[in-house]
Length: 108
Image: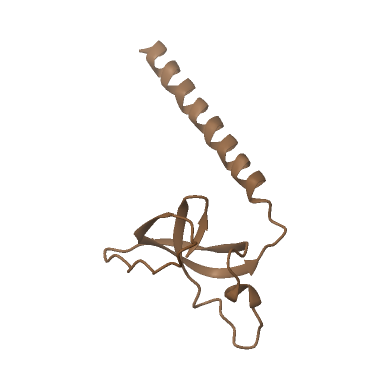
């Protein structure tokens, strides 16, 4: 399971594991990783893992899984900057949708 803030996502990394490659970050807590794959919505809920007492409280959809094809350690990834960029993109999209709705109302 990976998480950012209060949001978490199950990740299936079975296609990414290599017995010959050392991936020490797998054993580290709070490692920053980049995972690429496809999202799968399952009709059957996955069991929620037991987390240690100091783990942050997260919200996870037990029906949603990222089937990873690539997982790499990304210590230099600035998650704060990443999240700000995503937020800005969402705001631009919301403004465009609002503008289109206004234009549609004005033409009818």
